[in-house]
Image 1 (cartoon, helix red, strand yellow):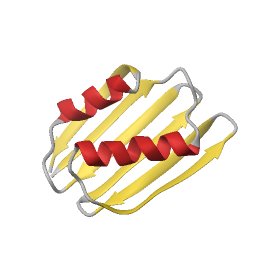
Image 2: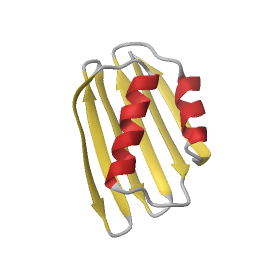
Image 3: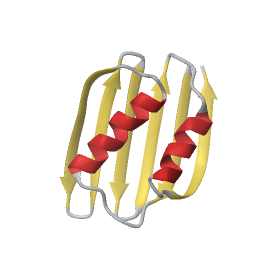
Image 4: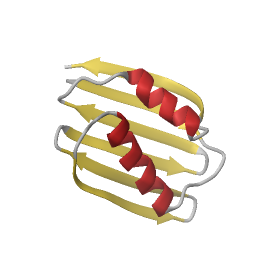
Length: 102
């Protein structure tokens, strides 16, 4: 089991469609099967979303340009795949990277 927690910056606030696409793409890159979602909501200066995967969950929260992402999976995955994908989406200052093996 792995639990990846990270924070980053994204200069634009994502809309619900973009957040949903991000979570779907992340699940696909990590070869995790989506069981429910994505479920997303937007507010004045941000958005929150999650997807339940058969192996656990992925969540996303953004307030202005600050972003937090949480990936928990019973299946091991390569962190580099997450970072590569987020770089393609132009996330900046990936930090507070914490990956727990459970």
